[in-house]
Amino acid sequence: MKAKELRELSKEELENKEEELKDKLFKLKFQHALGQLENVMKLKNIKKDLARIKTLKEENKGLE
Image 1 (tube, rainbow, N blue to C red):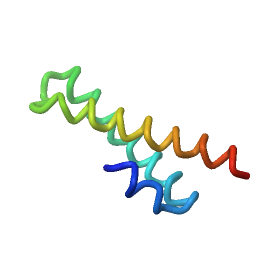
Image 2: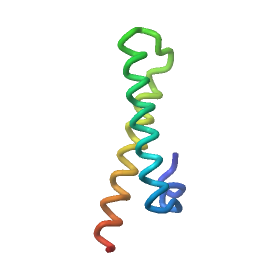
Image 3: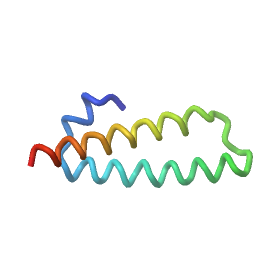
Image 4: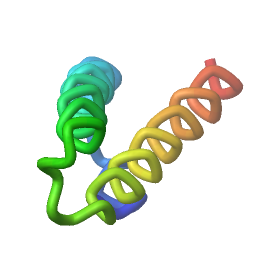
């Protein structure tokens, strides 16, 4: 997900997206540990998306 797309989301939507991605990351890590994950790049992409969301949340804190 692009940063531009994330900037258009409301605070509540960002929170929901973050929780969704954390859950997805947990499941993918579990699959990776069991050797069932075919595309390890999914892990990297989700981690990047989580970092983008956290960065935007910190930026928004400064604006309040």
